[in-house]
Amino acid sequence: MPDIFDEVSEDLRADRARSLLRRFGGLLLAAMLATLVGVGAYETWQGRQTESADATAVKFMAAQKEINVALPPKTLPQQFADIAANGPAGYRLLATLHLAALDWDAGRHDKAVAAWHAIASDTTAPRLLRDLATVISVQHRVDSGDATALKAEIYPIVQAGGAFKPLALEVDAMLDVRLGRTKEAIALMRALMTDPATPQGLKQLTQSLLASLGADPSAAAGGGK
Image (tube, rainbow, N blue to C red; front, side, top):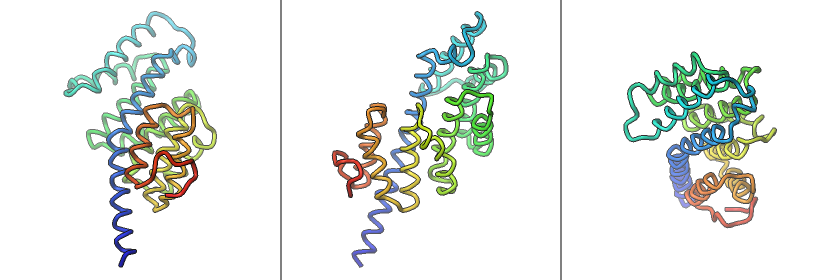
């Protein structure tokens, strides 16, 4: 009988962890996206272009700010659609990422996933954006997709490293939770807590996730529950 209660408790903790990821995961992705804009990554990807690129940057930043307001304007999808259709290459891809997220929020999940996959598989797109598209796609399906297939989808980012490896590891850990591999998930999260490359916001989320799983966030990486 105690084993049954332990399983129920484990399931409840896993549900709390997934709920936290749903609540805060998107905010972290948005913050990482904003970081790309802030550091001028577009100039690195496509070279400094004309005033047209500067004008697109202003439009993109304005639209991105409106995503997080309480009542985003009804014109927001069209703003991103215009950039996706007419902007320089880097901004087209980023606007497409945002459009896919809006489609997901509107319940058009298949359309959103198809758009993310199109970017992730586009060999002409910068690796950074391809990785971002993969992480966003998998993160949105943490609760609903085939967990084993999703782990395989995100595995190359976990292995190769790069700017989005910490977030990929976080999502990978949540997939372990879904698969009942709680100890493995906790080990990944503790490793993230001690990795200096992990952004502070992600460390805070990881700490909350560890607590929701009944683990001590301050324990050494790789330790038990």
